[in-house]
Image (cartoon, rainbow, N blue to C red; front, side, top):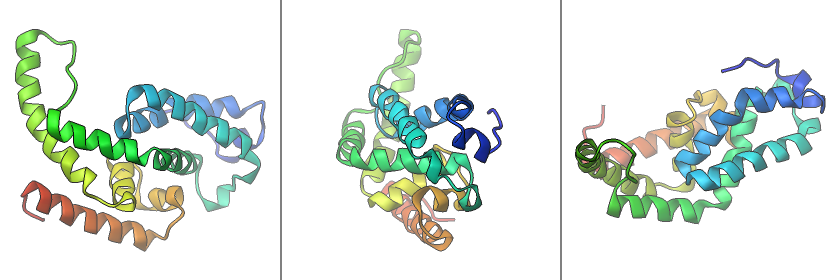
Length: 179
């Protein structure tokens, strides 16, 4: 990942491209994991358009560029929440989409992944929006609790409690042991 000094490129429209270059792929992948790849391209572009339009509101004292962008992306995903839940429910029924590997490997991978992805997708669909956002920002975005709190505009304790509740629900839903 490219390191970008937080405030300067965000505030300066001529240098905002550095923010885009540093974070676009990461944000697109995060959205793609939560929704679908076609939607990810559109929402990632919309994330940066919104960030560019709101660049004058960015306050580096409140956090870094990365959580700020994840917050915008998560809000956009929230608008598509019903589609996300439908996708998780569909994956729970059908399993993951096929890859372009060899036929034998694809069949073996699909059987194994289908069971895992189906169960996990069903479990994720059963979480509240707030719980799902926290889990996926940590799991897909690799954000810290502080960064998740910044991205969602909630307290650190809220992130910790949502993640704890989500973990318990996921463990119960998946029939695994809570550690």
